[in-house]
Image (cartoon, rainbow, N blue to C red):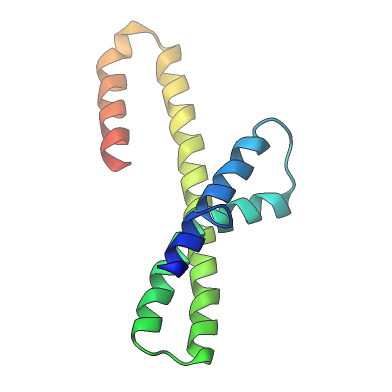
Length: 117
């Protein structure tokens, strides 16, 4: 329980989301972006991976390797998510620019995006 509460709270996902929102007001550094990504979904992914390892009585070396693995998976997930958000926003902007005749395609696109998220 402590692992998940720490990962979801101010030193985890909530803290990362707060940093992300604060970063919308100014230009952030690449180090800050990595920290945000590691805290947001990354902490919960790490907690999930480590919970299984702890339940299976993994040794310290295995926990260390799984921690590094989880950090990298969490970072990759957030980067992919940010890229998809940017691409989706651009797609909607392009469809909206074409006017009312594209309303059916815009509605279909909105449905597909909503379904995948």
